[in-house]
Length: 472
Image (cartoon, rainbow, N blue to C red; front, side, top):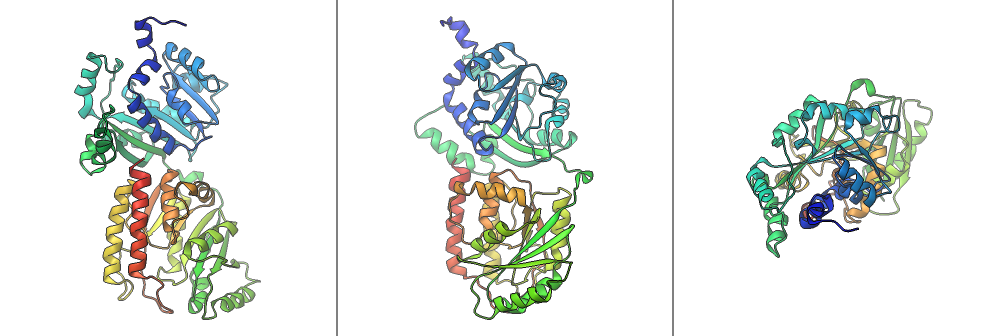
């Protein structure tokens, strides 16, 4: 089929090819966020380029421009396309009952007459696990993009709304969504050898300078509603090595949570009789209906292996980690439970650095290192994480299964277990919140932290995080 020059310039494919470097970067972000084989809706899909790139198991593209929809249907016949707007989709018997894993709004909010109404209308297609992924051009780039249109370097797009990150967060809040993740990308949208890589993978990651990037991105979810709470069960994984004197105190302190509380001890080759103590306690409590207490013995080494073993054996809807040293009091698990079941977060991370600590609970150098690593990882992951190494973490079992499925993203590099979970939570767009906890001095046994050896491992994890999250 032959197209005139004017006809070619009216197609979406023409402009994607003309600005291929930018569109490849845009697609790489969406492919990073959206797992392959998800159920995806794109509002303002144009010719379906982005929808096709994320490889959905079911993809639905919506656009009010019939020419774009016809182009999309020819290019990507394996996907579904509808000409119209979200209000039309709500009335369509074929699609109105659908729920999506991800909803893409790429530059779409810049074109809409009423952003809040659009966001409100999308709620019909959301579950509590649905993620909206939004990208918008920074208003700093308005004159540059308009000049690009004049010079025929980019399509003529009648953007109506040049909003800032704070404006978008306010729109989302008004429509009962909350932000899970945000990011800034692309200082140089055209490919210039060496220059593009230097600016987009280096300088664009510097705080404050990143605000000058062309696009900002937000991942959002529906705000949790208390009435959506269902009866849930809980599994507490207690990792222990040489913790004989803490076993009974752990059971005495763990609160009953949900309609059933399961306690799983994972024993890691103790020399002080910890395993025998666990066996004795399990036998004594076998007729106690308050808890279902079990134990497993590691075949591998390290806390990460212990956590994965415990999680794989757990039956509860909510999974909790409690370090066997009991430096975080088990009684405080109820705060984590209350936060996760009402939807305050999907990954609740303990923070030891807010409340006053008991004397001797943490060495000064460890305290400083925890502060610095918290700041570093918060920057790398674009998430506020005050304390990466607090052992107490809580999440839904269904989310852990997603994290476990995506472990190949990082590889088997984390000996602590904390970073497998933190990186996995970020990769899977979980809503993360910090939970302040009290940090106590040990009453039994000795710390298993080796400051310099483990410090080097933390530096290695920092580099891996930077490589995986900042240089993608």
